[in-house]
Length: 123
Length: 348
Image (tube, rainbow over all chains, first blue to last red; front, side):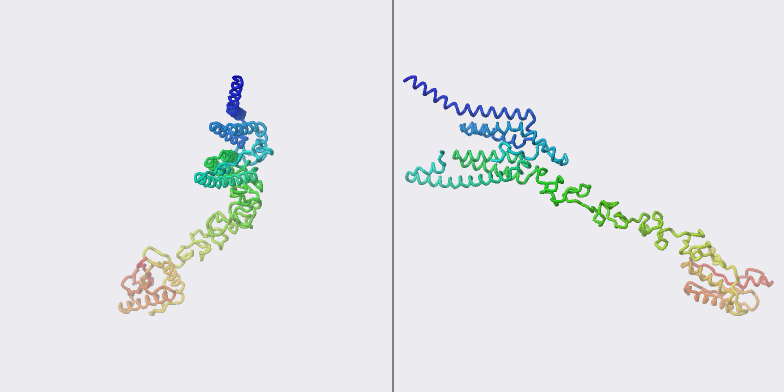
């Protein structure tokens, strides 16, 4: 009986800690992905992805603080996915921007044609 | 499956408290329903316009999508106030993206002139960027609107006639004769001489077109002609001939008309002159008679000059008799000198 109680208690502890740990882990991954994107300079040609990733990450932290760990994890995953997508999106956007051929002063950096299948794009 | 929060609250009827709760939840349901509708509308808009938003307002799109996700989350957690707040953020972001503030460059540009259609007054005609009104997006084939297309216009920004290849017709020397018609465009001259200065062949200061004697130097007062029978001194019009009268009479002989004509012309040439005409005789005869004769002759000369156009008030006739001889009355030569008419300048 003691073992059963101990086992149930351990299981309850694990289940209770599961949500926060997963959310925290997802937030960490998203944060790292964003740092890497910025460190590699991909963020310059991906204003949408970076801004959205920042927004989802902030929301994830906020929801984690409200103990909504499931939603926090989902938002963090979304942020990580967007940040990671900049690896592929940035070169495409840069190329599209250069091919626009508009006068340089009027062409702000980081703008380009929308790439097909952009993560977090069409919902 | 997660139960809708409205139904979850509405499913607890218990007396008055339950009725109150039902009322509150009903109101909450209405609010939640409205939030859902607005959220759905925003999502539809962003889906339909995703490419445009992505290209032109990527940050606004990102903010809107995150805010919508938060609104959905808050609604699912039964937090209508939070949902409403997030939805308002989403709407604000969409509004910002829709107006495209700061993102005009990548807006659709049908004519590909680099000016987005929204700012392009001629979205289907590319701007020609010729330095003239290049911001409006419209080509300006004839900048100065003179009817000569810029490609053919030597002065594309200055209106000018076709005949002058679109350049304005100028009057370089300011003489009123436009350069194309001016034979001397840099030297002022009257139109009658094709814009060239009129020459003064006799160098008398009177231009040939005004010089009655263009090849003879003369004063401007005499129309550029020289006085041949008279000269003008400080105090008189000096005659080089005598004025001849019939013997013992005041009738002027014809041979003196030319002389008097020139005197009249000199007076007319000098509008401020007022002339005193003095008649003189020799000493032959009685002084009283001589005085009357000299007065009559001075009067005769005055009348002749009036007849030539001189105003009467400018002429004063005086008979001096033999009172002012110039020479010896004992000799014929002296007496001839003394018989004379003088023209004194009284005012000038």
